[in-house]
Length: 79
Image (cartoon, rainbow, N blue to C red; front, side):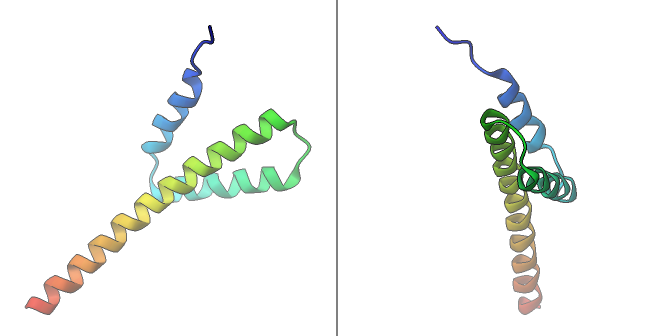
């Protein structure tokens, strides 16, 4: 029987609370670390997964901002 990896779950919960700028800045750092290389496969995969979660968080913020802009434009057109 395998033990569930709660650290990955905790990490995703942490990232879910990040603002756009923090998620973006951490994503930039993840990319730099991956580009430098020099880590074993498991470390690289874990870093890649963190990068994916950070990129998704950025996308969530951007989608929300896009919706707010579209709503503001629609509201101004009605006035």
